[in-house]
Image 1 (tube, rainbow, N blue to C red):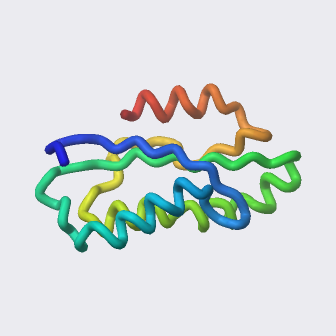
Image 2: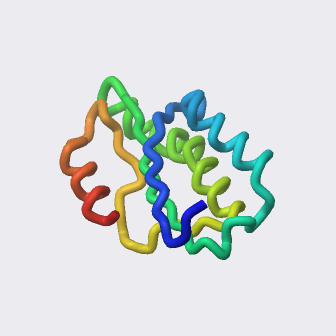
Length: 111
């Protein structure tokens, strides 16, 4: 792993949890990396969870459930010794109802 790097992870999430690729990242990191094994690398994580609701009602009612399921990725990175990016940045966007372009621009600016 390089030193002083930033891992940018954008994952699809829904009420059932993370997408297949997101679950695979979490599983692989938990199995293959020892706890705090990357601590000396000074790595940071910029994470954005993306949901796709059909309407404002479902978006607001499912947001907490979507965010809870998506938290497994930051947890896996923190377990490995990777810090969450200190700069304030969005960590959740609902592509079905939110202004995705402005959220992505804010996310990119923080990196």
